[in-house]
Structure formats: C-alpha cells, structure tokens
Length: 364
Image 1 (cartoon, rainbow, N blue to C red):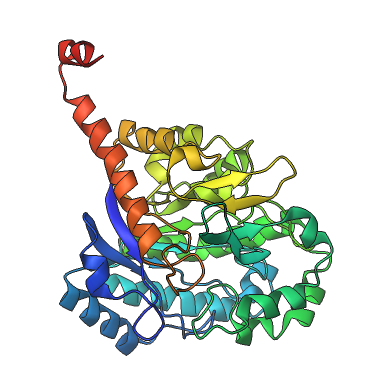
Image 2 (cartoon, rainbow, N blue to C red):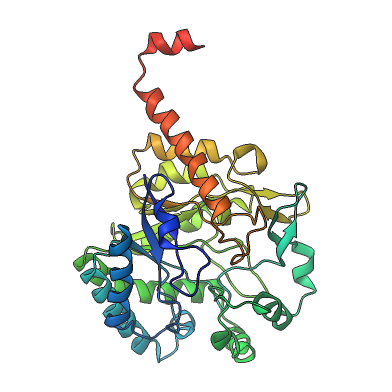
C-alpha cells in the first residue's frame, strides 16, 4: 500500500506540502488543476509547475484526482468528441510527468452530495452529513448556494462556473436513463482506455457518492454488480476502480471486503474512510476508527493486505477537529490521524503474517 494525501494546490489549500511530508509514510500527493474547467485540455506549463512544487517537497505526483468528464460526454451530445479529444491530450501530457493513475467519475451534474458540511458530533467535532429526507424537499439551487457560501476555497464538483448552468443541465438530463449513461460511458472508455494503456496510465472510476439517484438524476456506479458490469465494458488493466469505502459504505448492503477480493487486480487507487449510517438512511462521516462508524475499516485494510495490494491509497475525508479552519472534509489533523490508524492496522497485519504459528499461540 502506497500512502498519498489529497492536495488542492498553493493558495487553494490550508494544508502545505511541508506538513504533508511530515505525515509518516506519505510519499505523494493526489492533485489536479482545479482552475481548469471540465472539458478543457490541461496546459503543460501548469502541470509542470505542480511537478516542480512536488519535487521540491520530495513527494511524487503519481495520482491525479480528477480529470473531470464534461457533461456533454455523459449526455452523449455530438460535441463529446471535442471534449474527449481534450481529455486524451491531457492523458498524454500527464504521462510525461510520471502520472500513473487518473481518478474520475461519471456522476451527472453533482460529484457528491451532502446536506450539512459542518454537522456537530457528540465530541464537538464537525463532519460532512447527509440527511436523506431533507434531499427530497431541497431545491438543488439552494443546495449549490449553501455548498459555496462564504468559501474562499474551491469545492470539487461544485464549481460555480459549471453549476451556473444548472437549469439547462437538469433539462438536458430529462429522459436520460441509466442505460443511456452506460452507453455514453462505454463510448468514453472506448476512446480513452487505449490511450491510457499506451501511456502507462490506469484510469480509475470513483463510485457515485452517495450510491443512489439524487434529484432524479441517474447513477450507475453504485455497488458490486455495477462495478462488475463496468469492468466488463473494457477488459483491460487500464480500466480500473477507485474503490471508495465511504461512498460505497453509505449503503450498508455493499460488501466492500468482497469487492476488494473480487476486483483486487483492477483497483489501482483506494479511498479508505468511515461513515456511520443510521436506520433512516442518514449518514455522517466519522473518524477512520472501525468502532466509530458502520464500515469495517479494519476488515477492509486486512483484505487489502491479504490480496497483496500495492496500489495507492489515501485517507479521504476527515472530520474538522481542534478548531481547524479548512476546506470541508479536507483538513490536516483528522486525515493525518486516519493515516496513522490505517498504518497501524497494516503494520499489525504485516507483522502477524511473519510471526511463527507457535508465537501466535503464545501471544493468545
């Protein structure tokens, strides 16, 4: 397991590269050009500037999250070939600076949805929260306003310049079915996967967050059966999954440990985080500790250990603790704590694998 840390860039993140470098076992950043609108080709000079910054800090930039997919590609519009061409040229440029994995998603309009970015918990921390019943009565325009209010930092998936066309986007998706979305995803994969293969890059789709339809929009990357169907669309090592335990874990029916064992060779990137799911379908993001949520984090790390996982991982979202002022879900403190919990589990499984059977019995 190769540990990484998501970083949003100088002037757009409360966490510095120097702080990231000091977290034990973290070797690289997960990055993107967040000022480049979805669909545009990434400028090489901006890519090289991130490489310079990462090199200076002694961190690799092997993983990009995300090269966003333009809505015209998801909708299957005639203009999609233009945006796919830009995507292909971006893949080729990223390969030149050593990128190995590109995380992306195929969620219509919204990358992720929460109803409260700072829900207070029992211990006084705050965390991202999803209130299922509230969504049914919420105007999506009001949700956009709430997500972006009073923030000087970009909110991935909620960029104002993209969502200012919300009315026309919702109109465009009327009548778009799950099968339509599958067909448009197939078209995209057929174009980009051969290019990724040629450039030594693995594409890694992120599950829908949460893994069910929102505001009547179709969602298709929601569970084990759909992931199996997705991988069959293009049977190539370059067509992979970003297995996110938090996104998939919002549905307690999802068996993430079984997914790790089934899809092990097609998971180049893992998001490991915990959520607590309530009986009414609400969920809140918690610490990474297994006991604090509904997701079996210790079992998930053991599964990665047992399958010999050598891909990239990151702690994904964290709570806001110790009065940290940060981008919702992306502070330093709780994600660093999460990394150390994940390393503790990993090291224990590694050590246990090399302890003689007699010594194990003595310990018991």
